[in-house]
Length: 313
Image (cartoon, rainbow, N blue to C red; front, side):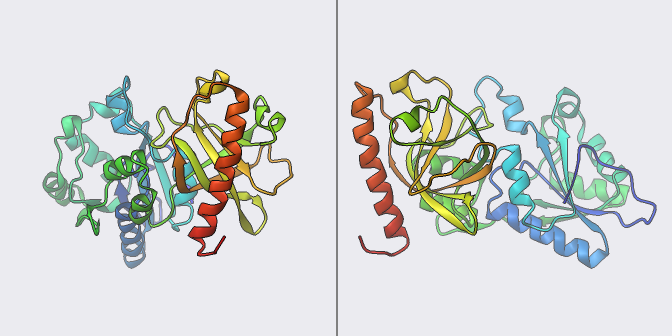
């Protein structure tokens, strides 16, 4: 999958693109439907498949003082998208210029980029003040030389799947509901960095990952599976996502302790998959009290992971 930061003009061979456009935060089943249809249409038209998204996400840009929780960092979107077989991943910088671009100018930019068909959801909007809806884009495309295909919403047993609903589910600790909407367990991906190594001195060495987002959709203590630490399989573990108030921490980070593992993970990219939420993060009266609870958390995490696999204790 090729990464580009702007819409390129058409290639000399005239192949062009079939594109889907949006924030794609979370890459849930609704987003996946758009991606699969984009690839299918591109193959049918002899085009390349293209996903156009934005950094920062528009909702983050418009709420800089109080941004919504972000489901996927840029790294996570890239890693997940690489599994879908797209040809090109285009990331447009969402800034004042793009914010103030009219719907007409946005449509013209798509046409100049060699896009022959656009695949979007029913609620897609573009342009300053979100003035351009799907009816506008269909008319503009007819004038500019591209087609518009609109997909209906994707629903699960509780209603329409959306990034907003996923944020609510994760904040409430409903990991199973989020799994249904994502088609996978919620996870975070990051590179392990060298921290203060406090966990090692307490008998709980951890792999520390920065969140790479201003606000996380989840917090607390979790039973997890960690991919990328052990070749060929996921490693069971317990993880804390929070600020570590007992030891004076202020910056949120993800710390994962891998069970029965003794190795060097510094610099390695890991994916931490959240299986069960055990409790809220707490501020303990002492480090000793915190360690006692950490042992209890580890035992509960082992049990939760056994139950999830259908194993008896």
